[in-house]
Image (cartoon, rainbow, N blue to C red; front, side):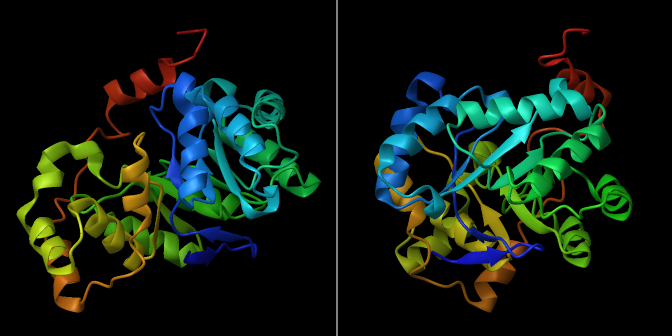
Length: 283
């Protein structure tokens, strides 16, 4: 497995298994199978409501805890120093672990500075090995990098062949923040799985469109966390280290970049209302 070294020296796999939208009732089975086929990095979040399934699968896997890399995220309704600190303890309990490898702020809303202070304390106490953010656009990322005590190790943002985040990637690189993708397949939006360029390149390597998309991101120094509930797809998504895209193929894929989200903008009022309303008792 290819890895990347974070800005505090922690080593993270370049490819992991994501459990967004995995039914909590199925999560333990899915994560168990992912570990069995070779995944060693698992990405979950408080908002996914399946941390307990991840913890159960890890405990039953037989794989030493130190060989696994667990990521979770603090949700908006737990924003603020005290609330975030309590939520971190709850995540540790649900994950049945003494430490979290990577802890992220899930969204750039609410008192995320307070949340980040709680995360910095958890980092100093050894309950967390690395901290970072998710869905932070360059403006908010720069602000946090310049004023927080600990520079975020990772920024997890929507990234796929149709929205490559090149400008944001440059900002992350400048501040030593690793770029991680959520939605590496755009959840199949905009006909990504039948894209003729990706299909043509895949045919040349005997690979699927999904494998080409993952390989492109990895060669672009972007960590990926594809999700599937099917064991054979889990294995297929992991089999992307036995081929390399050449310069011409990379350029063809770069030309697919539409420069906009396939989902929503965090600057749109309706998006902010939707995200901040989820789990917010004051909604």
